[in-house]
Length: 106
Image (cartoon, rainbow, N blue to C red; front, side, top):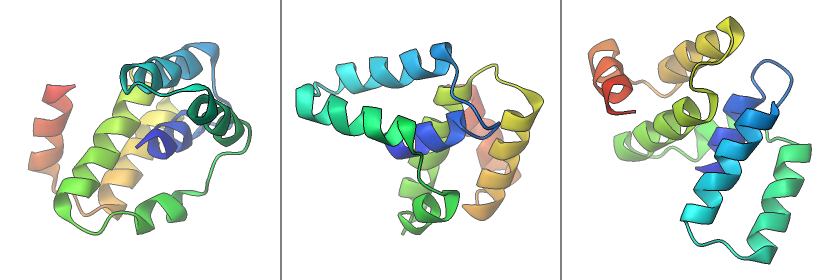
């Protein structure tokens, strides 16, 4: 899910300090240690392609988790990032009605 957050934050070609902070906060909430933080810092420096993240989605629950993690990372982001979420929901086969429900959760 952290990779999904990083990819979403990078949708407009840059990860802002605010986006980075949100990612790190979620990492800290998950109880990550120094090694996990180092790995995430490497991921932030070199985000994975969206196709790699999409391939991790093998069921609807995982698809929705990827979408929600991405939405959290770019909450209130740029128009490019909002279009990224549209594209992501489409690629994850999340119906519009379910996406509105998910958006209401976050």
